Length: 503
Image 1: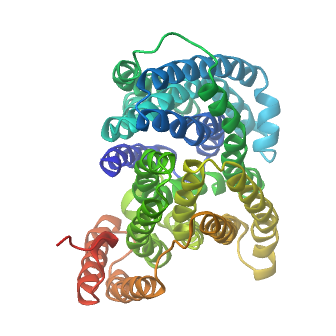
Image 2: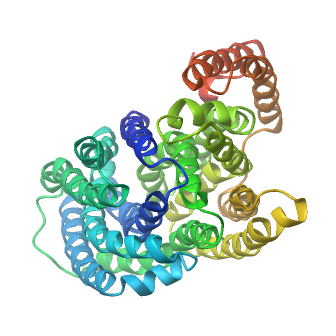
């Protein structure tokens, strides 16, 4: 249900990005300005919403429900919502007033038209962040009640607001005006995303006795700040990418955003879906101190993640130009732009498996009440992202004698290496607490072998179709790769999705 909801939302996001690429292309000031601007208010959503809120609120709320304390759980939910909205109101107002200063921190390389437009867009987009955080609270309540489809499919409403703006104002509009209309579409979409979830979320969390700073509320608030900092370190790494990319040629920021949408598709479908579904269950198991069940759930979830993310990583590395071309190469988006997005995707592929498994190990730490270990490891990852990203993006292209815009690929490659460091630290920490968990080496080897072998015929077919026919390339190459991988999975006796048939 989580994957189905996320798929609905992500498909709407792909439609939005395809239309965006048609009108804005890759190398335009308006495209870079919008993609940098949307990151700033989205930081509030990612930090206070799906990141810190899920990691601190859901374990407390789901734990109370697992112990049969439903009335107390409802009181916690309503109190957390009130506190969250108070904080967001202050932060949104401060963000609107301090936009020029924030832009200096996020995109210091912007100047002239790009900077002026970005400032205007950020001020429009900030209120949307507050609405998206309110929607994230709804998601936490719905997930705890196992209402996964509604909570994750609601993201399609946010995309629908922007798609509507592009369709209505795209034809004939100057790009700067279209970017402004798109920002207002984002605000409308955020309101829709909250509106479709709110009635069910408030009904499920009814029954409390008013607002009160009870011990469970205080525990959720105490856990909130370590999780906030931990998730903040993860989010800040993306902002460091934008900061460094602002010094690269025009198109680097938009290229990162386009590649991020494609890269986060498997991360969301598999990493977030498995982690989101497991967090309430793991919290309930941990509340009952069932260690063996905890390990069993982790092993099954890790195998499920690996089955899907390994072939996704191989596809990004070897067939990324086909994926980018089929989805984005229309209108002002040219074949050369698809190659740039491919390079950025190939860099992202390095850390795809680590990123999805790290997310699962992080929520497993939250489920057992450890919010500080993920924080420490996220800060270590952030340090590596900053140092490696600066070198790989700004220095390596000159040393290698390649165009500066390829520094964007260096950013994602450095993030991938840093992601593996964080994953290894998280796994070691969790295993020290509950015992050994992980994916068997033989299983992983079979997956990598099958994915690479399946990519060979797909790559050969790709070379026979001109880059000027992106849809034909995608239709011929991607189903061939997916079908070949599934066939090899059967021949190699790899359990589909990491699950053995029940007897």
